[in-house]
Length: 364
View 1 (tube, one colour):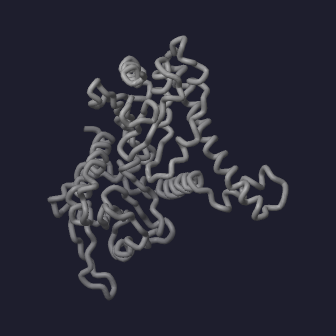
View 2 (cartoon, helix red, strand yellow):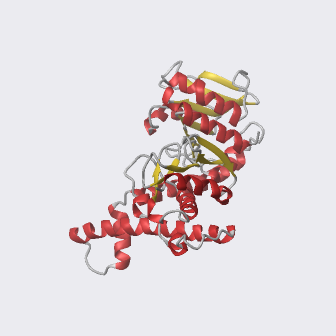
View 3 (cartoon, one colour):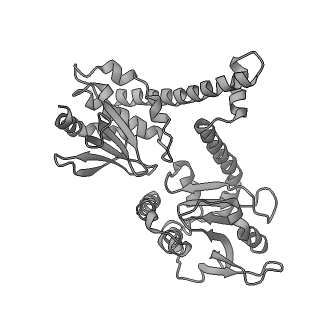
């Protein structure tokens, strides 16, 4: 099994079992040990490679333990500190990592709850762990750009020099991407002022700030919408798909993504890829009904496409969730879902007849 496939398999396991895991020990057994073995490639039952409950005396603290130490040639290379998957990771959880990092030969430290893995090194000061990770792996939303760097930490491809040399760029690029995402979700005063100063010549008063808060938020969502639709047009053109004469092609190819699709007040994060997939399903389905009747609802495990925004009228489900292997869920006459593996968004067009048939069953 390829590295990315193993990563996606573990991500699927975490998604399916997370609700049943309530303790730190259960998190270690169900998620973290499989990560060390199947992803990093180390034998968790070989004490020459992986030492659980690793002990090193730190100053006045005696007998303090770190959850796992990974060894190569008898030297500690990677330290892992684990927390229960039911909670979010906080920087104060890394206190033991800080102490151990300074007294071992480890150059990489990992703080994890089994779903999110934060990787640290010592870019800011030698032998002192940085307070910000240089790489963050979120199994609920895998960033494909970091997978090659993660591979360098595996037993087979371990390349510490390459990891450290790339760490600074990874650290800041990743942090900037996360900061931009936060600003799109909830713009700060500085972000609002930054854009206001470029389009408005007057004083930045409280009244102006309130006015432009809404305008900046709206412009941000429209920008994302435009990016989705530009990519959708490219996909439609590349696929060779031509809607039937009664399918209102202008509405299909140029209608912007509804703002509500990008403005859901929920923990679920809708991706551009899911919105593109939705627009393709909508393009196919509107040969049977008006485009306005095709709606979507995002959930943690799938993105649903519905007729009349009715859960009893499912057309399709997009199982993407940042994973390499994508699935298109389609429904039979008994509303039983069958998943079909697709290599890319263009694969949706191969199931156009089934999508139209689902719409015909509900349209009335």
